[in-house]
Image 1 (cartoon, helix red, strand yellow):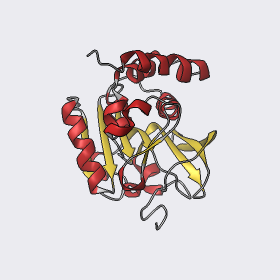
Image 2 (image 1 turned 90 degrees about the horizontal axis):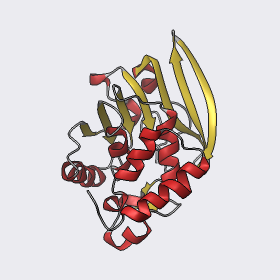
Image 3 (image 1 turned 45 degrees about the vertical axis):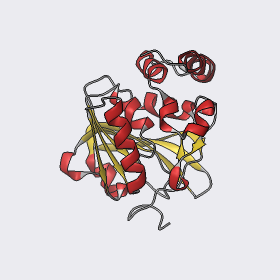
Length: 215
């Protein structure tokens, strides 16, 4: 659907994503289609496609477009996967994922955020997203295992429940570090073996929960 932000959204794809090595055509298409401005307050819509994160309610943020694309590309989705997202937030990342896989299960610990994101899921007719209010560090055991897991908050370590709920083979992307700066880590499970690869230095809001930070 054409909207007044379409031109600036395509410029975002060219200048912020392709120029920095985002090459998966499906990821680029999703980033070019999803109306990012719907996920921020009306007063911030003019900045929705800027090269930076933006604040949303309850002290949370919507990630920089490049980071969204980078983490999504790292999962190497082909369209058939069942994906678990920890930290629904604005809902933007979940909608991007929904364009690239079969089913998204997303968990959010803040009710206000979850209510808002659900309204956008309905508005955009994202019928392959299922969301719930809970401690995301515990995952969502009911629908495990997941072909891919994305965590959109930074924790002190990789939560064991998430590793346990990852399919074999499977890929998990998570920021790990202190409460100021984290290293984006790729966890790969294959033939019963776990490998961890360091990707990018990042800064995310805190991953709160039993297997994360206390606050």
